[in-house]
Length: 178
Image (tube, rainbow, N blue to C red; front, side, top):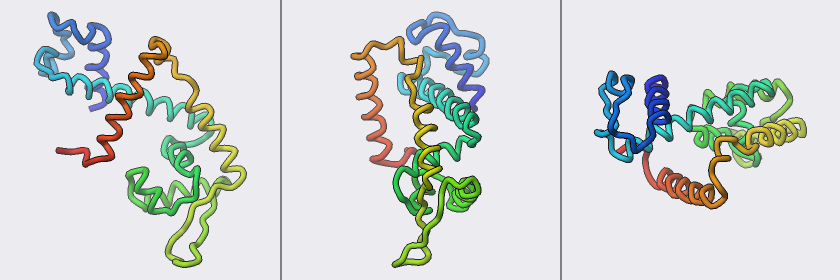
């Protein structure tokens, strides 16, 4: 699916959203003609393309710090003390996967698990001083200004931010599927 989306995004970048008169062979061969696509479908294509580029960015920055993309996302989430189940829910993954991620960060001395005094089944995840420093460095590099936004002036960036906030608000309001 990622390759198919890349082809759609590349074709869209080359021809533009409003250039409906021609159909690049990649789109026609895939059985999709831009003239037949609704605006919401074109938006989804672009969002998937942006998501893929952001995933690549997180992976590249994480690699420079010797973190997997999942470990980088986990460090981002650990800005405050959280339980294992809270982290699993926030990362949308199975708690058993979080256990493996945490174990690797523990081995590097970046995080510790603290047992809850009231409920010994609950484990709290807390960054060590080394973990706090690693998180700050990682986030500083992750959230440098993205060159792809340079084409937008401040007003356009503010407009985009407001639209993205509305979309994110809808994500929180209900399920991702119909």
